[in-house]
Image 1 (cartoon, rainbow, N blue to C red):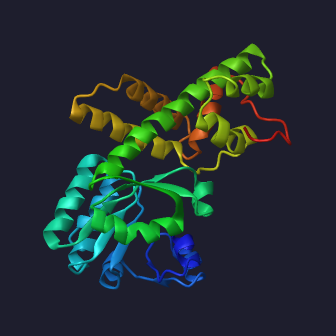
Image 2 (image 1 turned 90 degrees about the horizontal axis):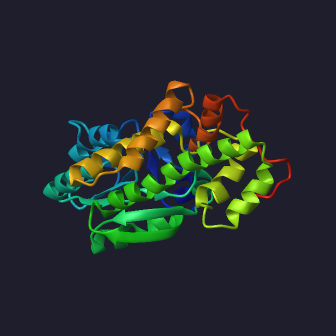
Image 3 (image 1 turned 90 degrees about the vertical axis):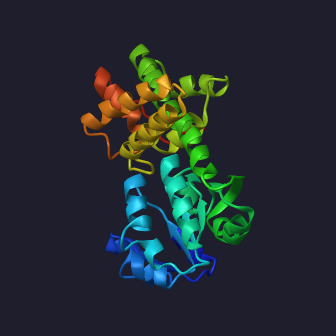
Length: 289
């Protein structure tokens, strides 16, 4: 995402706890800040992409965090996947200091992000949305203004509720097909011709787990974190989410057996491991979808 900002000629200062990530951006012409505080002091818009609520609160609201060093009139745009309470707390704290706040979590795959084709779900005032839209358009091809601050985060949880649970269902279905001795390609041809198909099975899985690539585009550990946020958000709203709760325990099982760092499509391999089955793979040369 940051690389695409540089390719579109946006002036960029970056900070990452992993030096190699910042070094790669320096090669594209970005400057490197020594800390979030330094980043805030030299920026009018700061974008965060962090693992979860704890990290976001620490980086933005901490004693030496972004908000302590941003000037009034600046803007924070958080693209992390967090809980609604965190986005609401950030919005309130920013408003108190005269700083704009936008929550803009990301949809689609890591491969889309690399090509500048991400989808953004944006919670923002009309004024702040107009301000960040050029940045979002540099990183993505589809921008949805979902409503006021907090709306992007809430939309992302709804999206990931379906995306992650579809992976758990796909894993069970293809493991069952493997146990039946069915041909994978023919089985997928049938599924893609009925309403049983879904974006994970049709778009993501053929280029990830079914192609033998389980490197984390979106890791099982992060998917587990998101389902935890979803279950907790449902509890806060008094909306029962039994499928999300069951799906989270499927991911808990996969993590307990060492699959946490793998792509969430590797839930198929975890399910086959649990069932004592060889994980199915597409034949070389099979076109995706």
